[in-house]
Length: 528
Image (cartoon, rainbow, N blue to C red; front, top):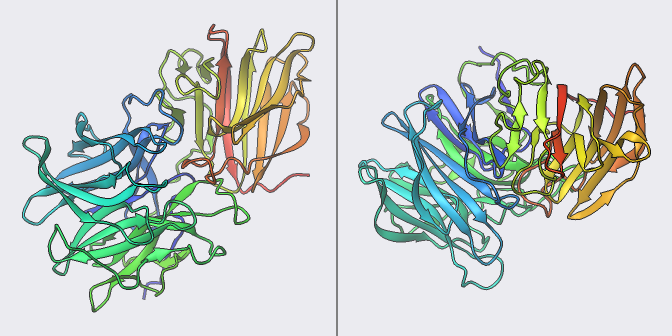
């Protein structure tokens, strides 16, 4: 008898929110939100729901995210598959502050998950969190949140609306149906419809994306309703217990294995010390079942997300280890792990060809820019980790900077960088922005005309410690522990912390820096 195996949650660590899962034959795919980070919509692939790999990114042509505010752009992509075609619907948010949502919903298609994908079709605007339901009669239905600016207060989510999509005309047709008004949990979002046992089941996220997040299930015999709320609602939440290891549980989607087992992919968070979601919102998977009276339940009972879940009755399928911990920049294109802000990297500012074996970044705008940041970063995926780089940079003024960055958004970052001081020459310094309050530490540590300088940061829970090494010297420690509690979702946005490198030239002369490598190591314990 084969030994029982388990899914270990979260299955996608670090910033991977709003998961949508789909099965195509023996393959499972999850897509997640990316907001202002480029490329948009990563695709994670599995054969057993235990082992996952980052397979590709769907929005990998230059999208127009320039100028979009923090935590806007790509929200809640929903992937589906029908008759040999993949369908992806997603929202591009241009502004999200109250009272309006300047947001546009698009559809793209492909016959292969690796693409090519079609040109985007604009379906509607003014709302978010779309999904596409393929009914048994062949008709397709587009769902999204109804956002009503007339409602008092900050919660203007007025439920779920639905309209038919015509593939031939490539547009929405017919009347719009209001199918669900939401429950007293409020903030009804992320609708997905599934047909099972003669019912249409509508899954939604409610309670907001913070501590009160939840999955609500309602059902109806008719697609257009009326929908009846599960009498034990919510189906999944962690709102009642702040000590649960998986917090903010909500925003779910369903998949049925080829062996007839059902699972729910959902959003979760693991706050440091119960307070700071530095890794952002992650993706977990729960085993679920249908009860005799036709409701969806966690198989182990209750409504609390579990860290360990019995895996499906499928052969285990581990993937070869993806060597993404150390990048020596020998390739001609960036590794799939890397991300940029609001636009695609191109040779005008980000080159692996100008100097072989180096990542050359030319100086862009400041870390507060919504337009032209020259920053390359990856998700922080572990509470304790070490990041390191080796940089060559010859700044001529304090307006030219390059270095190692811990970045949440334009209002929240920590920057360990090289620049130029009129008296000391090339120096190391630290600046940070905490919930919009900027601080410059004025360290001005000279590096003695070294040709290159190695920079390192050790991150442990909510604290970072910085080190540097020039010439053949030993590592020197900056004896100022830096809090990174502000590099978290609490009160900031939706994206989680990133670690990487960047260059600024506020003179506009495109002064470049060369990075020889970037190392990311997990499970490094605090030094000193």
